[in-house]
Length: 186
Image 1 (cartoon, one colour):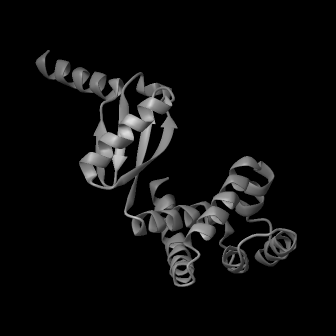
Image 2 (tube, one colour; image 1 turned 60 degrees about the vertical axis):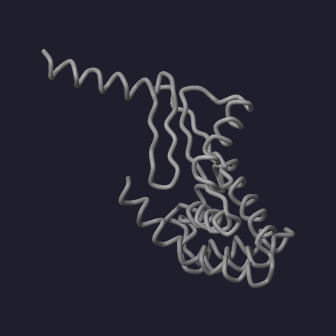
């Protein structure tokens, strides 16, 4: 799975970088990011659209034609529409979520922001998320945006990843460490 994800990121990065450069040169970073968020939300909300993007059974030309028809009826940012058409013609629509993520990372970096991946056993309250974001911002010296995930197997605590640094205070990890320590003693 990790190898597949790195391949997708490798495919996504050049598209995201090119879109970022054009959007920045035309002062459209915010509107492009908003349009990409809308596309990302559509992919997440519509299983049919998600399957359409990923399906190897549908030819790239057919996907491009379908996307042209959809885009002609919407008010999508022209830069995003052009990107979607290009990605469809090149048969790379399966990498669209990674393209959106890579663009958002570039935009956040340009604004001096950093994203933290936070996994907790239960959803964080707004107050907890705000407190965690402020604490991380003090630590890294940048504005921190949280991407929150829930994994009940953690039992309690958090796993926070900022860049390449991982802070794991989950009970699952602590119990595993205790189990290893007990095996060494006994």
